[in-house]
Amino acid sequence: MITPDYVQMMARYNLWQNGQVAEQLSAQPDEVLLQDRGAIFGSLLGTLNHILWADLFWMSRFAQDYKRPVGGISESPSLYASFADWRDARGQMDRALISWSDDLSPPDVQGELTWYSGSLGREVQTALGQCVTHMFNHQTHHRGQVHAMMTGANIATSVTDLAFLPEAL
Image 1 (spheres, rainbow, N blue to C red):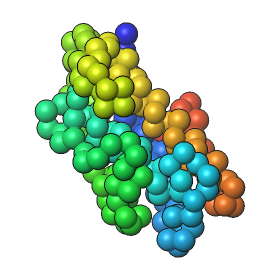
Image 2 (image 1 turned 90 degrees about the vertical axis):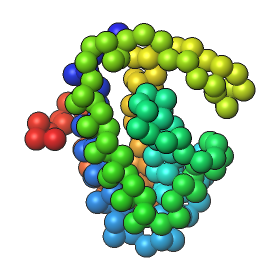
Image 3 (image 1 turned 90 degrees about the horizontal axis):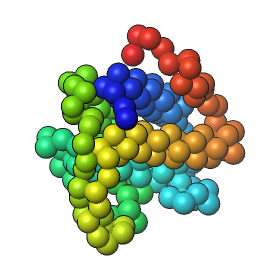
């Protein structure tokens, strides 16, 4: 279904996009980052926390080196209380995703993944490639919400098109 090259491209896209968002939001005061903007995870920081929480959760299923985050979806917006802490953790996760993706071989993205889904309340089995694709799609989906919140708050945004992913990443 997917290849290691696809996963590597998406890990680099993720790094690029999160870096841009972090740079654009770093000058914003806490009240702007924490203001409830009516999004599903409330604020800019809440939504960014949710994305990171989900990445940690998926990676705990994909690779043994990752520890499952504490709490469920409803607690995910409060993963980090400060933007600085989120930014540090996000950078670590993005570098870890790059490293993980660079070590993949074709068999690593094949087969099935079985896990207990807390949100569904049951065990689930799905194609591993579909789960990896979902992780990256989930990031993009919620970063789109972040982009909309930034636009609504008159915070400058950058290019998000995958076609313009810098080769240097």
